[in-house]
Length: 226
Image (cartoon, rainbow, N blue to C red):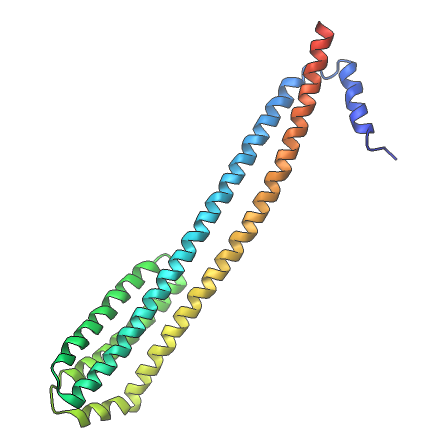
């Protein structure tokens, strides 16, 4: 069984006999090439981490817009109820503000998820139900003052309640899907970063070994030529 020092002794024997007299330059060039490769891999790791930060930021932005949509539609429901009960025209301004907030947040959300096919499809369904919700409460606010009973009846109507419940369900599902997507991306990035780092370490070790061997050969050749 070969001892731990025998490969090096065998290599030095080849060097002393002159069999590797032209190997110094290729060994050193190989070492430099490996080091450059390791640097490139570490650069890839930095890029992966930057992507990870970008994904986290995007997920935060998506969740913020979902929250804004939910806040807007709930505010829309409350202002319509308030207007029906009080006939106070100030509620019309509140309702307009909530409607504009929902529209703006939905447009921003569309841009944020446009790169992901699954979220884009999910968003299309969400937009439809949000539009139906807005149409229901827009029609109620358009009734004008003195229609509290009609508004109350419309809000408890099973068909309208189904739209309201479905909209909340889809908002929650959209939020859950975004968090799951972020977790999957982070897990993939972590695996890639770990693999890349391990590979870079192996390459660096190999580079130092090749460089050391190349310097041994070069030093021996200089000694022979002196």
